Amino acid sequence: MRADAKKNFDHLLTTARDVIAEHGADASLRDVARRADVGLGTLYRHFPTREALLDALLRSTFDELTATADELEKTSSPTDALTTWLRDCVAGATQIRGITPLMMTAMEDPESALHASCVTMRAAGARLLARAQEEGSARKDLDGGDLFALVGALAWLGDLPATAPRVGHLLEVVTSAVLVG
Amino acid sequence: MRADAKKNFDHLLTTARDVIAEHGADASLRDVARRADVGLGTLYRHFPTREALLDALLRSTFDELTATADELEKTSSPTDALTTWLRDCVAGATQIRGITPLMMTAMEDPESALHASCVTMRAAGARLLARAQEEGSARKDLDGGDLFALVGALAWLGDLPATAPRVGHLLEVVTSAVLVG
DNA sequence: AGAATAATCGGAGCAGTGCTCCGAATATAT
DNA sequence: ATATATTCGGAGCACTGCTCCGATTATTCT
Picture 1 (cartoon, each protein chain N blue to C red):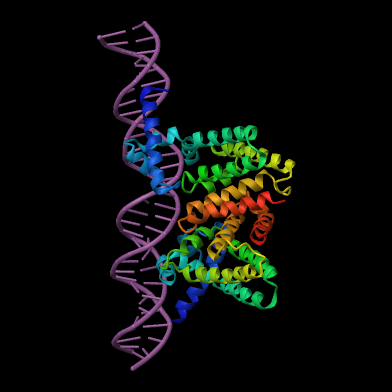
Picture 2 (picture 1 turned 180 degrees about the horizontal axis):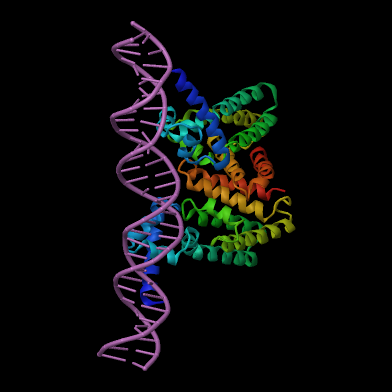
């Protein structure tokens, strides 16, 4: 990668973080380019699709979440591991406003730049769920897809001003539903 | 209302139903006008905002749902009333793809054309919830807003291809969480 | 009937969007 | 210093929501 290219790449990332914090995941990409003092073509070459840009922004969060899952699997009880991971997961997805719909559709679209991250996250959650199920502390009629959907739905509520304040409480409610046999 | 106006009004409504069934709640209004053989100005005069159009489309569904709530309150046990109403509610909101975000934000925006419908629906749900709580069959740490959020979240999952098939099952899970004390 | 009027119509126009494409500029290697 | 391979930047296309107003037409009055 040429030096100027890398400079623009980094600058675009930090600018995108700001703009998206203000306007959500469907912010104007033209606006991002403008505020980064960069041509529109430059942005699109570095990040061919909006998903690619968002994935770059969330990559660290995603990696952290799967790492946390591995950690919890070794150090905590199945129940604790599942509940704290669910909380972290919702918090992570709420990091970027309006990303949940994209994550859900990316789940079924192997072409999406977010696909890989989503699949590994679902797998991480599924492992924690299975462990709790074996122990008998989680409902057995749920799978990783169900868990992912619930987390996505809660994160989606966290994006809306009307429901954001309730999301902590609702997470408890949903968690209790998952854990009660 | 002049005769030609009414003709256009009705024609717009049926056309909008079709277009929105195909492309979801954020379909192109220009497209609706085009397919209704009507000028764009005509559409915007009859329905000044997108919410107004959607409200017109959903008005009957909304009225049905609140009527059903009243009916259930008189005829069924608190538990049955709540569970069947939740099911009907999710089904109703899934009627029009992509309407859940609009409903949630309309909840807090008195200017929105959907505001009134949403508020009365929340109230209807709140009554059924309160009845079940008095009986002791529903969690007491929930209010109408929580219930509305849960229904909205489930309806949102119903809009996404990836999660739509699971929504029936997840409704059961959530319902069990609401009902277990 | 015919004319006056008020309501209705339709689309041009503005500012914005996502995304593509390619000539111009430039960093790097020779 | 020159050659080449990358990178840049924005014009351009097709679309969007929404406004505004001259032309058209249904209705009413004489």
